Image (cartoon, rainbow, N blue to C red; front, side, top):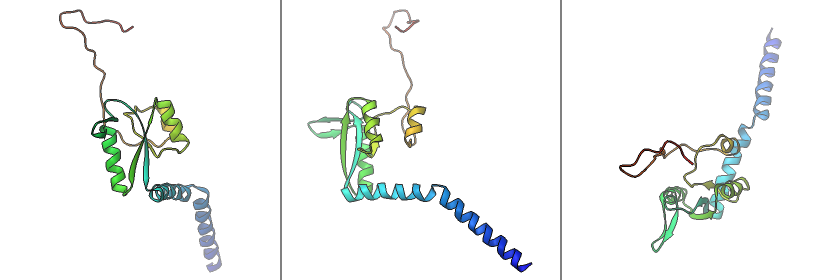
Length: 145
């Protein structure tokens, strides 16, 4: 009876060890640690964005914008410099993120299931609704062209 009990315990231990080796938990943790270590070793957080009036722009005072302020605060919390990289459109932005040329994409991006399949999506921190503005004392538009 004692031998059977030891065999069952050994089999369960081997089963749990095999499950731990098969599932990517360790790989995911090491990947995150390696990414963090890469940011720390280069001393800079690379953030991709699209140049516009809200999320990121430059003026006489330097870099500004909502996404810039968030990225700057995050880089400061990591103890590294922030390096913003601008792109012409979202396709270029996501391509660079896919190639690991930037660490984050921040450009008032909308959720899309296609992007959720390729990238880890962070929590929403901004929401807006579409509004239609038309001239006073005119009929409300019925169609969009």
